[in-house]
Structures are given as structure tokens and as C-alpha cells.
Amino acid sequence: MTRKEEFEIKVARLRNLLREKKFSGIYLKRQDNFSWLSCGGKNYVGLGELGNCGLLVTEDSLFAVTNNIEAPRMANEENLEELGFVIHAGTWHDNGFEAAAIEKFAGKNAGFDFASPLGINAGEQVKQLRLSLTEAELERYRETGYLATLSLEETAAAIRPGDSEHEICGRLAGSMAAHGLTLHSSLCAADERISLYRHCVPTGKKVKERCQLGGNFSKYGLVVCLTRYVNFVPVSAELREQLRLNQEIDLVFIKNSIPGKTYQHPFLAGKAAYAERGYAAEFDKHHQGGPIGYVPRDYRVDYSHSGIIQENQGFCWNPSITGTKSEDTVVVKTGNFEFISRPVIFPKTEITADGTRCIRADILEK
Image 1 (tube, rainbow, N blue to C red):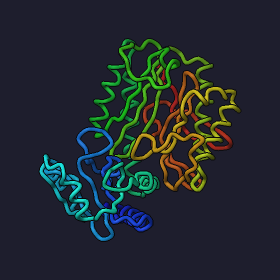
Image 2: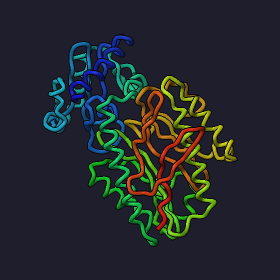
Image 3: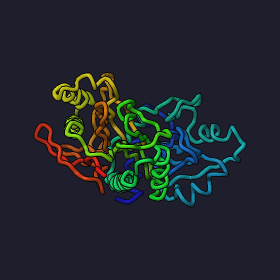
Image 4: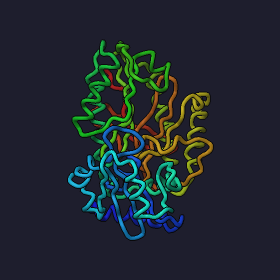
């Protein structure tokens, strides 16, 4: 699939939405949606919600609205003109240029992927369009998953007792950057902090016996999330068994993430899996994750989410038991699922749940 072919699929989805909602155009400026529509591009300088170039899709035209700072890169590196966009750039201090351009090309009935006084916020509807990944996106996702996993596992394997969480995350950031990845978040916990906090933002604490390392990392806009463990003392039978049960719970979430079913199907199956393994109380102690793709989580699924799972949709469930967490990125398909992040240099273990088997990363003992 060429970039142009992938792009045409996405434009067709947007124009169907445009007709359904009777919009005169749809304006995408969020960083995640720009990456999606441009087939892996960037419209930002620093991570945030909105970028510095918006893409306007009308019934018969394509416009990129930006400023004179970003326009050359949008043309020369993001290659927007190759996709059919006409680039319109205002002077960086012309605060009225963007609104005037949108009204000129799309009138006063445009939809936006963010809250804007200029029109209707269609961000949720646009999000739905990007959940089902194209084959080209899957290829990029596999590359991103491999590089993110390799980078994190190499960093984890290089940890030594006495390293601080800050130092470890610093090395992780450098490794991710060297592989062309963008770091969205990194979590690191040494020893007792693994059990104390579900979200262990790094501190100056130094590793003695155990370390947990994980986070969210992207390339081409596609986000991969994973977590790994390193032990500097022998892994106890109790810890090994707990991680195995934790990974079984994760597998129940994954295998029940079936295209055509609602998000409640895997969510409730996963909740039952906690109880069946004697960990019912752990379910309420942390969110369970959910769909992933162009943001670290499209939703943190709870009882309120009734959306339909799509073909080729990314998921990262992250069930946890105090002291362990199971977290990798997958893509679900009819009758199957594919791990996007899978062990590269870490030891592997086979996990079985309800007749389904998979290979997961084990604890690295050093």
C-alpha cells in the first residue's frame, strides 16, 4: 500500500463523516490526528494537544493552514503537497489568519477536532475514524513496537544496583531518541516503590534488588506501551507465580478483545479473571488500560464505555497486582491478535489462559 493509497482511505472516511454531519469541511489540528491523516507526519515542535499546522478537508479540496515558520518543513519534509494539500501560510504574528483561511475555504459550518469558537467539536467522531488501522499503519506499528521494545529492554538489561531511577530514565530517553522514537512517558520504580505506587514517576531512589521500567513511546505517531522487570536477587516462587497469574489476566483481556464486540466484553472478562485467580480486590486499585494507537490510550475503559471494537485496532491492557503489572501492546483481529511489543532480548515465558497461549517477557534475573 502506497502512502497515497493509505491517505485516500482516510480522506474517504473523513468525507463520509463530513456528509453525515453536513459539515462544509473538517479541520484537523490535533497532533494525533495530523499524524494519522498525514500517514506518520508531525505538525508539532513540542508534545501537546494541538500542533502548528492544521489540515482542512472539504468535499473536493485539501488545504494545509500554517504559518511562515512551519510552511517550508510542511512542504519539504512532511510532503503535504504530494498528498494533494495546498499550503496556505500566514505571517507568524497574524493571529487572524487561521480563522480567516478556514472560513474562506470551508465557510462557517466546519467541524473541528478540538473545541473551537469557529465551529462544532467533532473530535470524538474523528477519533473513531482512526481506530481501525490500515495495512500500511500495521507495518509502521510493527517497526515501532520492535524498536521501542529493543530500546527499553536494552536499557533495562544495562541497569546496575546503585543506578537511580532518574539515571535509568535518562538513558532510556537517549536510547529512544537514537532509534527515532518520541518519549511520551517513562515510569521507573526501584524496590519497594514497585508495590507502593501504580504510576512510579522516576525519583532519585537507587536500585538495590528490583526494578520496574516502562512507558509510552511513538514513531510515525503510533504509540507503543510496555513494562519490564529486572531482579538482582533470585526471583521468589511467590513473585514468579504472581507475575504468571497477572499475565494470565492480561491474556484474558486480550483474547476477549474481539472485533464487533463492545469494550465491555474484555473489560468484564478481565474483571472476572482477577476474581478467579484470587485477586478481586486488585481490580479497583488501578485502571485496566484499553485502546491505543495515536495516543497512549484512546480510552481507559471503565463501565461507561460501550464502543465497538474495530478490526485491526490497537490495545494495551495493563492489569496489575500489587508488585507486578502485565503491559504490552497488541493489535486485535477477527479470530486472532498480534503482539506489537514482544520480548526481544528479555527471557520469554509461555502463558496460557482459557485455552489460548502466548509468549510474554519474563523477569530478567541478573
